Image 1 (cartoon, one colour):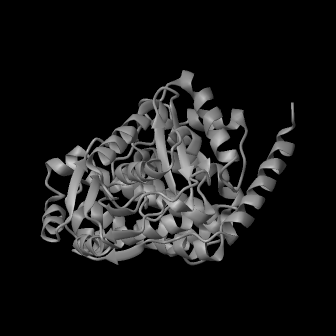
Image 2 (cartoon, one colour):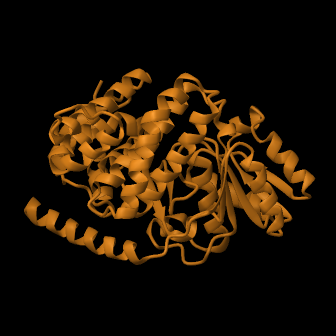
Image 3 (cartoon, one colour):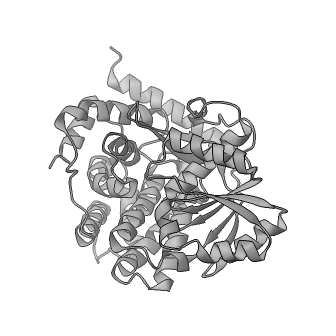
Length: 403
């Protein structure tokens, strides 16, 4: 058996190579519209791009509550015909994506508009890729395997969490394999996106909290990543500051448009950070909570994050302290270890304030070895974590979340 120290050296070498590649690759950013009403400006831009038939990818709840009403009216006024596919559920599956592709082909759509949280946007990305790549979704898993540019894609996020409107990633669930697989390629970034805080004012507190903690996880894991760059550090710090200042307000007062718009930018900045720097063990473990138990991704991240940061803190004390500083937690005479610990404590306080538990009720002790094994496989070949853990350590960490 290869000693763990030798394995870590191999992972670090692989991540160093990945950093060199990512550092030189051009990562596109969508043309951005922002502010209340910006979703309608995006509709105008779509019509100006010569799109005559559009597939709107969303979920049934958003259709039911009428959130698409103004968007539909605007598209009709502009003469843009559309079909709606609202079959996306949390953690979109291969089947849901293939069904969306069938609708796209049947309706002969020229482009896709994703409206919703991370699940509809991720699904729309993969539908767009499948429309131009005659290959199974499983063959696109991993990095840089979308060979042909996807169909034109536009995005309107209705939650401030995943930042999928600007990332190179989409996550697909395969219930048969109990697996969530990321597809990562710069070609998946939408052409245009609208950050319309006005669409988020009706989100209930628990969804606002979970998606906001998802954005915070992106910012934190990108900032402490060994593959962080000066550019990603700037975005991560800005996102953390905005979230710490505005997420409690957005949860407590959902109609606070200023807080909602600030959170939409925080999610966007956090995504710009992690799309280059990557994430870490929090995501690797929470992806498997989603695969095994269908735990909402933001909720899973919020639960897992303090435990992983406790494990990692001695290897990234300075960076955690800096996150504490931009979060307004510094006290006179603080040394870095104290401030780093206070930042982790603040995350736990936010979870308590938002009603997020410190463990996962669905977690089964018998599943822990498989969850740990899958999480380590994902992390060690994808993420430049500040401190590595082996199977036994990962199992022990996950066990702390048993209820």
